[in-house]
Length: 100
View 1 (cartoon, rainbow, N blue to C red):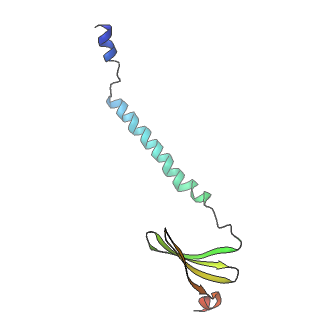
View 2 (cartoon, rainbow, N blue to C red):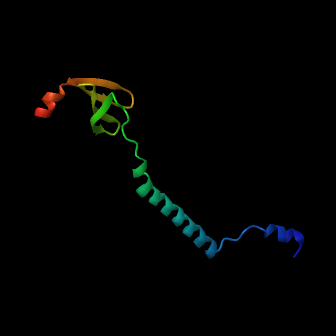
View 3 (cartoon, one colour):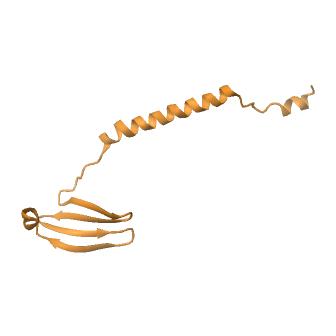
């Protein structure tokens, strides 16, 4: 063979062993991702650090619409949020809501 012909054959040949190595490597990486999601992410969960405003409850109404019950001091507010708008729905007395 000439040098020209050898230069055209320098491209790697995909073999069964190469394909198996790629699949095994992919499975190992996916396994690490799964382990991190299962064991590490729950430990990294950030708790509510606000001292003045607390989220008492939330309800998902539609895919991008959520209602929040917020406590600010001794008062509670029902707030609706969407991806474009935030609206105050009602002011709620916490003592009456707990007794019902």
